[in-house]
Image (cartoon, rainbow over all chains, first blue to last red; front, side):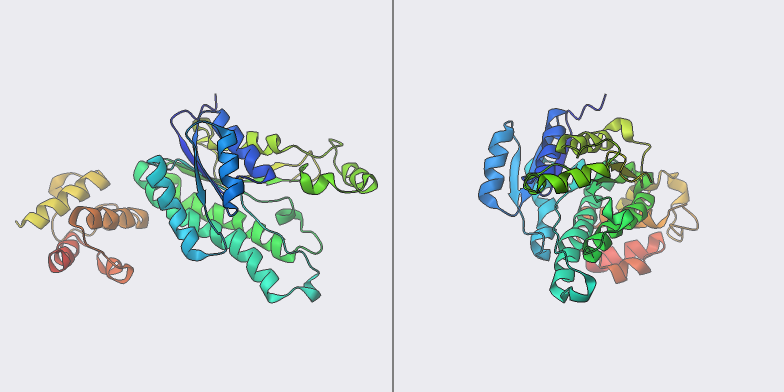
Length: 245
Length: 78
């Protein structure tokens, strides 16, 4: 089950913590990947560690022209696009009274607008192929909110609504559109937290620990598979039970 | 019947899965041939590819019948 052999996927933010786990899960199931990221050296080094004949496609997601060129570049490199994973995201946390216009703009542009542009571009070849899997990585925060993250929460909730609209538009063409919403996932960022803070976080999670990138990768691999063809417009929450929605 | 008309009708038959006899020049894609808005987008994409023309969104909105498509293509193909 969940075999992705013969399928191709574009994954944004692929050299990051969760992104690399997603890329490894998809490649592990047999998909051929175009991995994207903004740091060219890091991205190419990551592509080399993946092995196989995956390709690296650098892209600045805050630049509209760069984003619009990404799906055509992936189709040119891979021959087709079966799976799009919108994973890349940024945070610019601030209390709303202190939030600058550019902190709002940057988060909406990279997290929400880039996802829109990539979905729009991918819909065309997927419609023609009568097959597609669009998966966006959102966040538990998009559903529950979080102080200091008005911009980030809005961008993630925006992707959920957009995915539901697109799921309805494209269902008749055998294209599914879903989200995976991580809770707290262990990363370089969480590892440097003081133990007391880690304990406080873990106390909020019924499973008693943060998740691993692989937990998100497995959820994405499932939604990308042929077997998940009847699942669309959904958000799969992977959060150790910290929010049950 | 013009060559353009033949090719347009062939695309319509293939994309909408309708019988060729139903695809008259006066036929409306939505009212007579059962197309939905997504089908129209796909038809326009197929016309663009087949005839190597660009059909801008405002022109595409006015293409509601088979004849509209043939006329636009005849006027714009290279």
